Image (cartoon, rainbow, N blue to C red; front, side, top):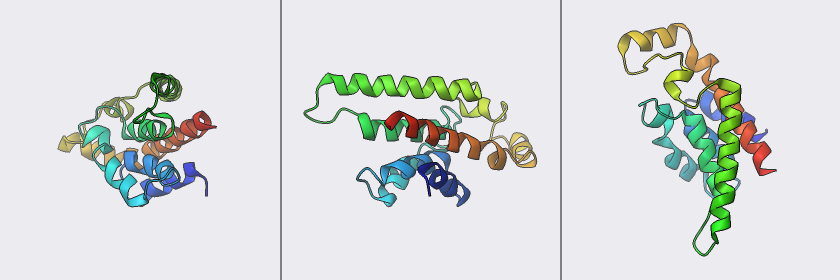
Length: 146
């Protein structure tokens, strides 16, 4: 199974978008699956359902940070490389979907408002749109790390 498929499967299994993407990469970069899921948990739903930055995006950025990021003893060039890869990711995701913002990606609907939540469920946005965002985020990360 590819990391993109892993991410989509995690999401289909009921995990939020952020840990789904992060775990698909982090578990192959030295973290345990459980650690990845716990670290990513708070970022689902655009950060604890606040619908800010899409969780698929934040999960991807955590993976890029783990792969390229500046650690203790590393020089500033590692930070610059991480920012470069992050900007490439954000440009590509925005090109594909028009936004990085969870609420915008869900057609402006507020998942915390009962009327909007009902519309999200009726339109099956969590089943139709979100898996695409998870897959695309994972695919972009995959391209950037290779």
